[in-house]
Length: 133
Figure (cartoon, rainbow, N blue to C red):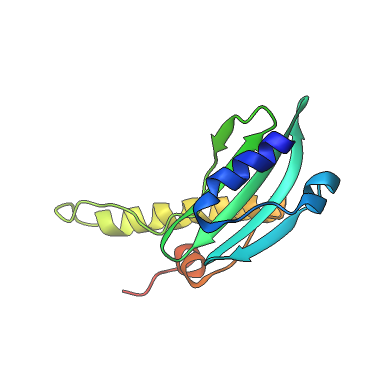
């Protein structure tokens, strides 16, 4: 799992964020807040391969939900999405897009809760509920 630690460190290298050695050794879930980032992480096993899975939030960028396997394969997973597109020329398209986005975010948040990776921010709250116009 040292390769996972190295990859995580490279992923957040610009902000000098690293996994605590003790959490890695014990495969303990944890939480890091540094340089504007809030990162919750867990360890798990998929078949014979161990992995680190993290959910990261920063006010200046989109949320990130990533799994890094011990062979350093990355898997991008669903994350809360605060943006959605619609065609203003189609009546009701904005409401449809907003509803679909909210349903998607509620599903993703439930999955994050089940894994122990859920975090709440103002953006998360607004993405899960009716956003004010």
